Length: 190
Length: 184
Image 1: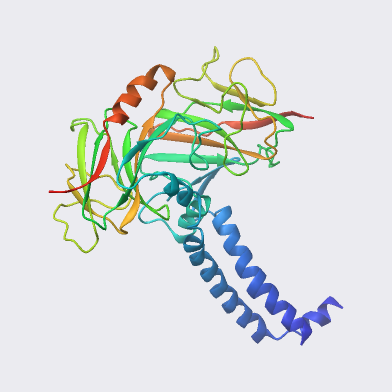
Image 2 (image 1 turned 180 degrees about the vertical axis):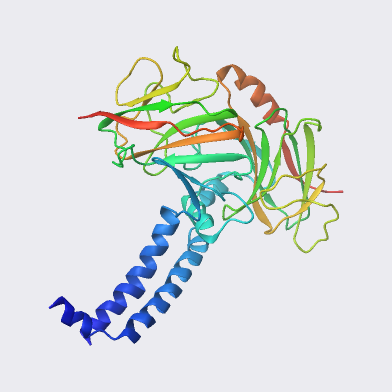
């Protein structure tokens, strides 16, 4: 019975189904990021002021800002918007494991600046809109900047700058908070 | 005619959507590195991330840091392939990674920390209590256990995240095993 059923199949139909299935697969995969924009990032955006650095409280079950973010990091987050002009972010990255990461509102990590031995811990980075010319040589997209970084052209006008500090135990909590308080984010008025 | 229509719908619609879901949710050998029950998305947070990896992390609404700096392993099942569940007790056993910093956190099925009276959600390279042999040993259980204990009560299905920063690539290392001790 099964064999007869298979014999009645048109191989043309199977071939067409494979092609259409492939197109549906590609379409479904590509549509997930834009559809998922109404996600936790949007929730975070609603509680963060624009172009101001906000230190998030120590992470526990009641304060967890995003899914899968554990208590082993402290975060300071700036929701940047470069529409009114370039935004400058100043951070102190004192130790290994500290980093500044830039994300689009959709959650794409397009730039990472890690703490690095032999480089000043105090760093400044200016975010410019895409249509402005960037003069510095930067490595983009989650790769580390190798040299002193001054300016970066952002892929979208809005997004998040996240300072990430590893929590190596409660004894370091005060020191970490003091370093995070040195971070700032503001529109360039000059 | 009916057979052809059914086959078309099965292959095109169910196959197309199902394979997309699987590649985004679970990943494949092209996008992930697997070690026992642990899975790491190798291009997470990177500029050259493939569409499946991008979709995976954007759908989760989380903050992936580039794998150039941090590699994150996730486990949703034990060493025998059974889904991790708070009705069971587990033992994590293995070697610590040789790394600048590592941490193990426990989350519920939606990636939320599991509320508990001890306010305990994770261990890391600085907070882990070492056994005499120096191995990594953590109990996952509803109620308190001696040594390193991560509470799971009330979570239902849960997952573990093992984050490793600055691992020494010259030294081989495997993520810890996840052994089911008993179930209620």
